[in-house]
Length: 626
Image (cartoon, rainbow, N blue to C red; front, side, top):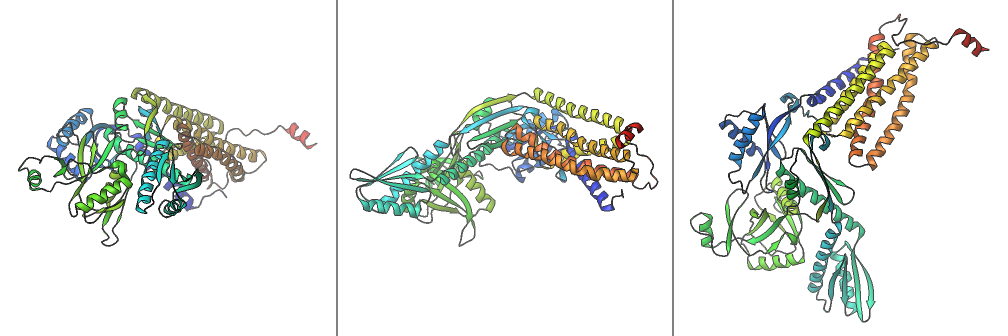
């Protein structure tokens, strides 16, 4: 009756082992570390960077506990702050020969002390939020009107070019706010314009009217196209912010959308608000220029002569010099899109570029006059330029053309990202900023940890005193619930905040409530005269419906908070919902496994250690019978 099959015990053991493994990293604490990340959009952090870091540390006699490479940085962990500071100075000297133009950012950081075997299992600790670790918090307002205005101006320019190519005379195209007014002298011009809109501008809609002798088309961006444009602008801004924040050496920045037009940027561990503001607001510009292929320029590239008059020398991504002319053909403002892809003929990676009408017209003229010559694409950050690529012009270019050559799929994706996200798609302004000191964060951690532990201990003492051995079972189940909650949050790499700690404390109370229901049901069965084994079986079975109902209704409230809340409310809701799920496993499935393991094999069981089972007095029972 009260025996689990072996497979159920196997599930319990496996869940406990997995939970223990993924919760363990949170108990090792943090060690001083040095993080090396890219300071430029054109500099990549890869295995080569990791090898340079290892070689520099070895030459200086500094041995790190751990040296790891992730998507954006190389991190070296040390046993003491003295080694950390020494390693920072060594790497700064080895990787940043020119402090005025640093290719890398060498920053102090903290890393988990988790052993390598846990890291190999991808078991990492939870991230600590801003309120627990300290740092700066910005709320940025994205100017969506500016993004739409910019796109409307681009559409107006493209329409002028399209009408000119179709030979429509006597037309005038002007942008008025977010709409475009097109005026014509005759109905034929209106017909041609409508055909042009239908063929090439599916994102635009037009309303025809007449003012005096002029025919007028009022063109506006379709609502769904405007929404797509706004979403794209927001995502591009977020991508650009990610690229820029790498400079700060922040281990786990939080950059996420809030609402339709706001971005939250949280930088744990950063205290320099002025520097953070400077980097968030920095602009990167893209320029396209012709490569100087004269004999003097080639000599200058070899270092055998001066740079010719009217040209400049820049370095490409491999550090090779490239001599380009000073005349700027087009800038990033003329670039509307850049997407990676594959050439249909050679199946080689490529990057498809789309220019506005002005840029397309310039590219058409320049390419026609400079066939088979090279054109360089430069990105400028902090006043310094770097050559992204310098392909040859192999045909007449226009609004749409491609860059192809000896590049990999990863390089094509990176180049498209650099071209697309070099600058902000829409203007932003900081409307709120907040700074939290590290001492306050440490105090918050201590208080939050104490609140959870003291609450757990108080509940455990009460349950053991009131329910005896069944109280011990409930306390063990409660500890398992807390273990699984921490493990799942660590698996999800969630960011723990103060509201999350509050949700943990609440999860303890919710979880123990289920055990109280089960224990009281067992007591009721014993009062009714049931045998101990039958009381255990009936108690768990009859309490299950009530437990399920109460947890489902609580879960619905948590999901509502998760769906409609934001910021701290969402953080609370995530921990709250996960805590409800883990409590149902620990309070019902796991605790019954403990009870079955302890009592299930006892065939002649006469009593249960579940505290005092209060029975109604005999006279009360007689009165009730009458």
